[in-house]
Image (cartoon, rainbow over all chains, first blue to last red):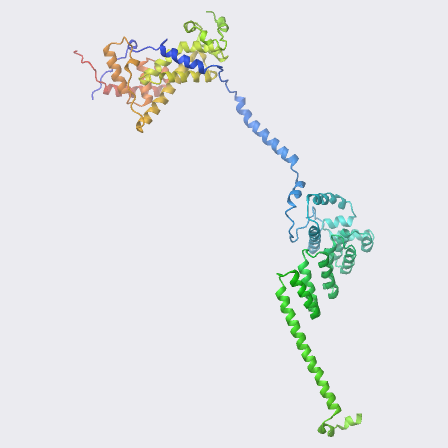
Length: 343
Length: 211
């Protein structure tokens, strides 16, 4: 297609809408839309700066409010309630343990285990509540105001506690005036320093307060120490005491089992039978029930064998006596010259 | 009218209908002052601005579109935007160009939307309203010329169509075209020349030179 020059469009040939009817019609619509007309004001640049500043202020105030009202010490009140099940070695963690030597890890373990067990025993007796937690929380400062050795025990410094104890009159003096709780601390000190006798003495003193929450733990610990010392009857009595003090305690099944162990070691079949029956009744799904049954049968079998042997042994002297009474002629005729000499 | 008489024109809410539109258009107050008054919520000043520039806006909308369909809506929306964004106008004396750019933008959006719908088969081609474009006093040759030019413009992209219309139908200078279409002068020139080349190639004179 060839290019042609485009004719010019004259302005006069175009329709002009100035002051037209359409213009008036638009204004009528616009007028109703513009009632309460107010042009939008220009946004200040400060507005755009103020938005992040406001956000920062809000964030900062949130952090301040959180830091002011959410205190770490409030957490145990929330977390303590579900922890009613026994947990191994989850006692209160010492806040500071700089003085505990590396060579004494067992001492610390003893301490924490003891405290935890005592708390569990107490929890079994009385259900945990917010009230009891408050009491224990407020009791902490009071403990901190006790003797120096007790404060050192609280932080796990058993050698330091021992030295402090010696400075303040010694173990026996402290034990004479100690409460069950303090006695348990003394037990920890004695055990950490290898003084088993002192520990047993302190434990026996705790058991004088049978109503104390520390009593079941004291009985259990005493049973262990007496067993280590070779006092099997004493250990059995201590375990039996634990079961009486805390029938549904954390170590009730173990205590019953240890009683059976002691009886088995003593070889007392009658006692073993009685204790195994008790164990089966109290713990029908006990871990060691089948083992005890087998051991009981074995002991019974040994007793029967021993009985048969003793009967056989008992029969032989009767024959000998008969021989003595009625000697065979051959034997009677062949008496040695020595024997006759002796006679 | 002296310039200090403007405050007396302040419209009391509820008395808008009583204002004589004829008097409003002949206020003689320049755009700068009217814009300043309109910024202070003076509805009469805004009406004066409307009376003064609505014809220009309508002409622009109709001439770019080639029809009066939705032209009133475009002008209505353009003045609503003006009322909302009047504070953004940096040079009050350039009110007319600013209004023109708003109208052009609205028309361009409408043309593009229409083109998209048409490509999807959801709308038909918009008919050319010759009576809306041509003056009632226009001679037949001019009417035929307008009819053919607008038929060809319909096939062009919106930007080129707008630029050429502003330049050769509305007879704006190149700088004004660039300003109204919100592009650089070079871009405006390029769009206009592309449309001009197309129209020159496809235009067929209705009447032979000998006739």
